[in-house]
Image (cartoon, rainbow, N blue to C red; front, side):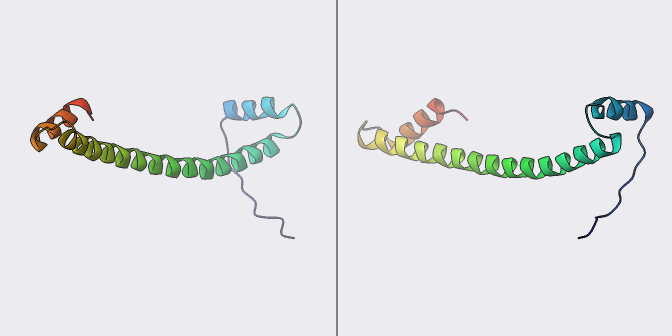
Length: 97
């Protein structure tokens, strides 16, 4: 099994002190830095997935708003006996956004 690649980098003294303090609970500053890096990489994938789902939800909400406008206009014309232009104005005024 491959042992992987070595990654090394320098950090400012204040950041190193934070690594030491937070890794004191068990492990070395290097191991803690490695764990943080792996968590960050995983989190990035998770955030991308969440953003994709949010974008799709927003599209669906916009589609529903369009469907609602069309349905409400049709109902006002059919049952409310409004002229199409008056129904459109009412819907646009009532359903802002």
